[in-house]
Image 1 (cartoon, rainbow, N blue to C red):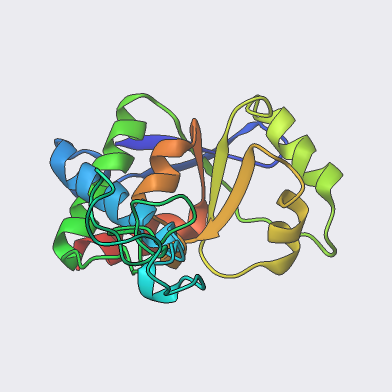
Image 2: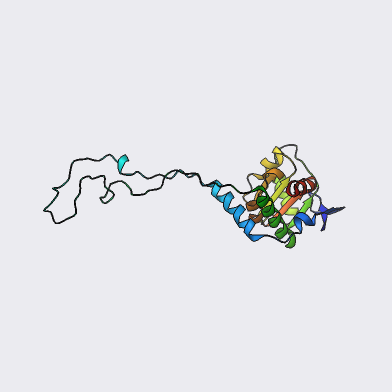
Length: 209
């Protein structure tokens, strides 16, 4: 799949980039996408939920009523989950929600997500650029020139670029990641994927190995 390379002014250049069919042209696997997104969201959970059980409640241990003759059930402690203020029965405990997913499944999921975006013509390749200092206004101008300022965008850089990252941080619909940080959830969550020219080969090499 051959696509035109654009500059940061939103104008098409004479350069073309060939997007590999082995990454951007595969038949998407929806189940792999489901598993990878599920793992990503599970890993975001803190898992710090906690409820006190009866052994952790500070209440009197005095027997509150006689064993027999009251017409009600036997009761020996106000810590019982049956009483207001008592411990919780089978309450939530801190836990780790993350789970393992095979590398090949994760790679297939990312390729599938990119293939969906390619089919929808929502991938734009940009010339490599840099900012001398963080400048949110400049980054917003790039999005405006590409006519994607009102949409969720994901810019994929070949390597860490602090100035570009800081320039995008205050824009609610813009996100910047490196190739190594690229994940299925972010790809699907964005309306438009912006790839810098040097990142294309890196993505293809990463997902095909």
